[in-house]
Image (cartoon, rainbow, N blue to C red; front, side, top):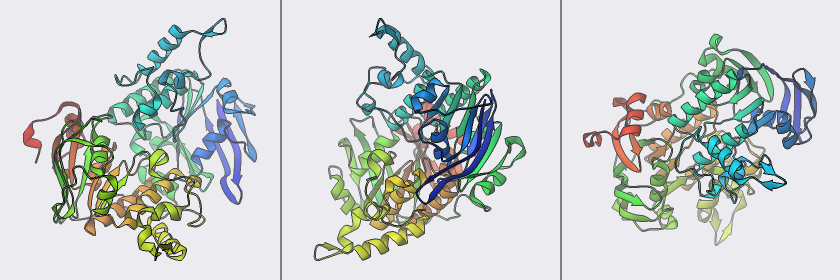
Length: 499
């Protein structure tokens, strides 16, 4: 149904695609694998006519196609679900879902039919808090991901390009999406599925193609390839150990909260995180993980409870600046919307919280800023031309590395990380895990959220589970498994589990 032949695309001196070839049959799910910057998203944008190729061909049903725009590609049967959500935040959920596909009668929008269609699309992801009339700007990142997926389904495309569709979804929603992908493939649709989670890929895909440095380097049946072989194809080397080996030696309490609640959906949470400790938060979408992290960072006002910081400081009603001064560092799950200044350079983004240390008598030393950024880029493995390159030009994974490098440059004592490896490839994840572990080993207290349970089990010393806005479980990671974590997220266990 879809074929790509020797596709090439360059941006100036950078070759994003250096000769990609792949085939997808009707009813087949093809996993497209590769590191960040390998060319996966560029390839999807070329196929969906968001970018014009420099060379090569795209064929549908054996015929070469030259779509002039993404709209024309949609009409031709190709729909792209973007990794970086491309929604209109000022419009409603319904307007985003049906943009360009609205039902009309005598030139006038048919309100009843359009609402019924929106409700039907949302019913595949039954979340009561997502209503057709809501503004997209009022929704969480995970809810916006659901809207992006549903919008592609509205086009009734024959070829679906899914670029990290579960990157913001919890376990329950990811399983629903997997079921939906299988239903769509059974209907004869051809699907290209990009994901950095190999477990995710194996649940839905039968075949794979691996991109490395803009070229297709391996393909075949997933059943014939081990995870180690796939990772080796992606990174060009063996990754023997994904999670760092560490023995936690907790020190003083650097972060604490008791009966914490906010108006934003956090009902009650009590916890402590010590120096040298990594604590993870699991839970379904809307369970309160992000709300807890934001309340601790000072972004959402506290209506109940208290917050404590290093040296037993009381920070309950302190603002963001005061908490940063106390040693708090925050990483947002929405790196594009609020985590990074995309138009500014890597150097500016990395050093923004620490400019006073790089200045003399009020004047910023560009040499010090450049050197500090270059050191962090090397430490975090940021792939870029120089510290002067705008962050918006980097791949999603490299943007995430810059966001984490900022906390390291800030010398934060408390790391508050909301989905720190979202949209990051396996090779880069290993680097980020190592950097997070190194920060903890150096005495930082780390509290992170993740929708990926194996990540929590492999990286964290203790794991808490959020359910309906409450922290319902906190246990040593070695005492838990994925089944018990999911059970707690769905049900709320007894209070004796809060240890």
